[in-house]
Amino acid sequence: MHYLTINKEENPFLGWRAIRISLERPDLFIPQLKAILRAGAYGKVAIMLPMVISAAEISAARNFLEQAKAELTQEGKEFCSDVPLGIMIETPAAAITVRELCYL
Image (cartoon, rainbow, N blue to C red; front, side, top):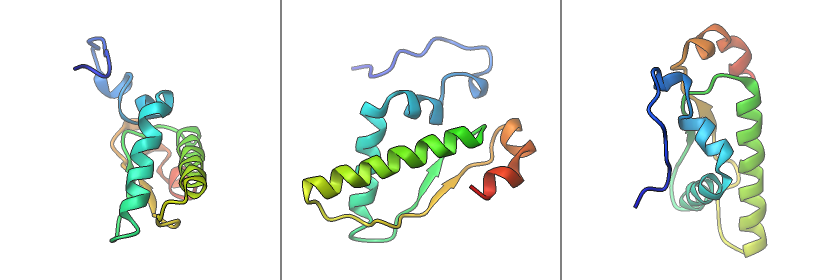
């Protein structure tokens, strides 16, 4: 079963990939975040956001992370509330703005 239909792109690093998919598909992203938060109750975990290109993407991901925490709280499920969030510097845009992105 295909969950996503991704058209062929000339340069997939600049297209609809990684963090951009996650931010546009919270129906997929929030359950993933909740699973990581829940696993954090049983051991050390961290979240790395792939192919980030802007501060806005980090901010949006943080908002979804807070939503996932709120849902787990409402559901009464055990989770780790202080899971570290990082980014992968793997795009030209991220490399150019690395100082800005690292302090978000």
